[in-house]
Image (tube, rainbow, N blue to C red; front, side, top):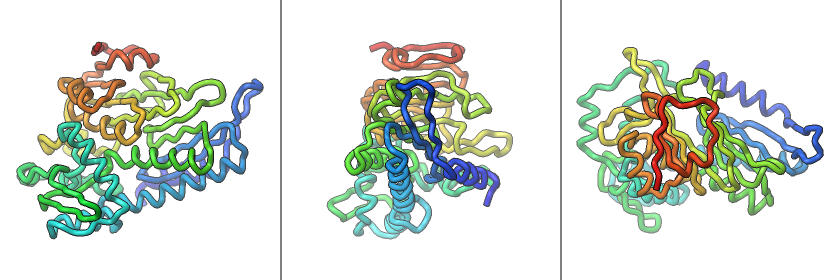
Length: 355
């Protein structure tokens, strides 16, 4: 096991040994319970308020069970349902796809079209070529340009896929689906729906590597979320905070997650489907949207769009709240987002898009 994975597992073990009961001296302060779960290659942090210890434990068990199941179903390179779908897509044009992956693929196709294919889960072969379809990246080397250009020429898109019932038609053998840009959002949406329906949970926040969904409140106050400073070495350093409204999904795509160094270059995992190379121009993009699946895909699409094109793509995807930090550490954001956040540190320059 790599040192990085060991550290993540150790962190999960430490957090999961006990349920952390936090009660302040104030009578109005909430009783909240926290735990952490390792899944989807990251630490999933959960905080639930206004429940009994037994209810909290039930919730944590349900979430962990759901995450384990979803991780297997949607893993892009291991031998699960999505892996089998990718194998069949490369060998034959039409086949019966596993029902466990069809709804997510349909949603991914819809969002790809809305984003003008800047969010493009069909480029799994490019993601693999750059070395990001594996658990560790410390031995990665830069891919050859001719291999990148060959995959670009094949032009795999989600519109190459047609689904009718369970019949899955793949019209381009270069399609390899990687749902890493949407799976966490879809998972959080499903988990929250299950908790509300079957456990009557009204106040909970689930954070998956900084991407989160919140419902209800933390006692009598809202959940307060930090927006990470992409240039800070400490991942807990925030450039701003936002008070989450019930039902908010707050997602960030950043060049500081999932990267490696090769030939003195910082190689991050967000591939621009137009160039075949890691997207340029952005350090991070944070979006807020009621639907976690949409927020997840939009954060990726707007990161790829960069400071010159993000407004157009945000409008097409119906994203009202956006904060983009470009590669010069300037902040670009919508007026709606400015109205909701509080800066902790002043940005180099601030560019506001008003309706």
